[in-house]
Image 1 (cartoon, each protein chain N blue to C red):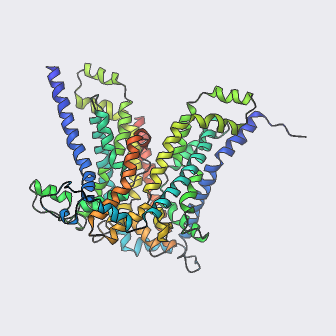
Image 2 (cartoon, rainbow over the protein chains, first blue to last red):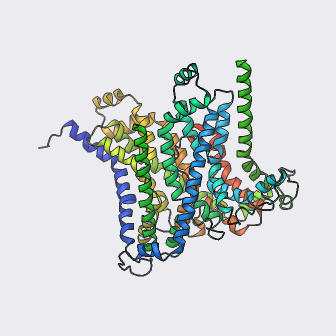
Length: 295
Length: 277
């Protein structure tokens, strides 16, 4: 005798069944590996020899016996807390500019997005040439406007990180789109009412636009911080962490330890620390945002 | 008076925008420029711009001096397999979140969204170790397989789209005896071409641009993708700017052309991907 199922029960089974791909993927590609990584961080696994349990030795080494860790932290924090606000200002300003009902404004919007369409590695090779000290586009331009000391952008420890920040800023079209979407969701009546009350453009910006955009700003900033804390792609391709470790990102250190030295145990510990810090900062940002939103 | 002020404001905005667009796009134009110059012209002062005749030989050299078409084939294969996986898995999951009612559905959806905030750097190492122990390094499995398990952003996009389709169709189909998978495959999916198009383009773009995964997992040079092909120019031909830029243009052009035809499909990302450093 077939057991009769209620419609709700059938639908529940179907619901979970259709979700199965994501659930399996989540367990197999996220949760599982994370736990595995945690376990590895307490061993000295190096892909060749049998792994040995070493307790907190890896973590101890990170804090006391690895100078590259300190460099990595410094470079990463410097990069993050310069480029995230910079991209925020840039993206938001651009979106505000593009939020006018002018002819052809959508063409401009499309044009500003093009940097995001260029494949990343291609754009990095392009930038490598642009930053060339003698014949690169940037120095050619600076020379034209009268700058006398033309730096070796990627080869000078003073300027290398700034070059990477500039590259990140060039891609601000992506953030711009998000802010533009948010701006276009603000009803024009608010601005009209403010205009009637005699509020200037700046006042409108501060008292209407920014508060209403606040959730989006928080959201993109958090994502920006998370992404920047894990950044290493550009440094790997363009500078290898140099010159003089001026672009030696924390995540680059993790990458080198894992895929150059194959010290899987140690690098797992490194990446767990990054994870904890990132999650902490995210929670902090969300908490602050909640407080501000409810204020 | 007000009109004149408005006109001034308009002109100012246009001017600022023109300047900004110029500085934004001139690097790309310069990339094209270098790719068609003679090697000697690259280092001439004042700067040489688009001098005739254009050296298409740079492009020929870039393609012929390397197994370009093998790499192109590899890349396209990974793209197609990934696209199929992502469309299938994300639509199934999104279907569950939008057309089926079950306890815990909305909570699970929030969890899916929350996982988007998890740093990806965390799983890179253990996943590599796992694939390594399964002897799947140096295959395309690690590159393709994850796409068969859904990606939160695409699940989100598809769910939003599905929610916009009228529920009456589902009910009519059920009355006609259609089972749930039939509703999914014969009703929802055929109507979802727009959102499927978005996912196809985004996945294609992600795979085409992917550098780290091919770097980690594709050791044999004959298995390389175009990203690795391009990066190799940096090491081999570090003084042959023209060939390097020709190669860069070759990888860029398909994306630009695709963008030209499918702008709306491209500009969907809400800052989820993003290689910033």
